[in-house]
Image (cartoon, rainbow, N blue to C red; front, side, top):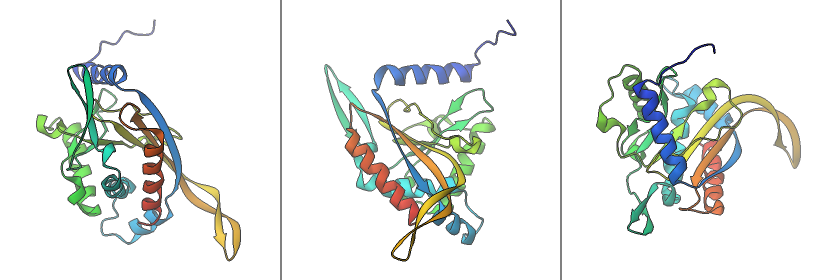
Length: 225
């Protein structure tokens, strides 16, 4: 044995939430590849050079308006279950607390924010978590979550749904890769910044066609931002 490490309170909370999610939700994964060229061009001309994550968050909010059943939760009333679809998009952003626990601070009414406002909000909630200043209300009432595993150069991530929600999106690493690009009336091989998006969803709430259509629309939204 190299060492035995007791779970911290943050690790115990994270473990409890994840166990609950796996028990209660029917996890299913779908993924797609996105060309980040449009986002990189937009970042280059934007004041303050917002992170790619802020553009993803903006595109997610726009796409959720067309796929509201992913901005939802499953409610149990006695022996029955029903889907509760929320009007505000309260966007959870998964934040690692120095590898000791995972917190999901919430940006409330995220659909009303611009890309620069989302960038500032993401920075603020991440700082609040890592400086241990996040208030209980800052972790409450989330309706959809994004986890940004791509900062570690991941390829495909299978995220676990945040309890009380029906879906979570993982943005994986973006790297320059060969891709088929339009060339006049035909196609050519070009080098593009490509990355995977992975959506874990609760199959009790929606079917694969709905989740896949959401992911397809989100890809189009990001590629034309």
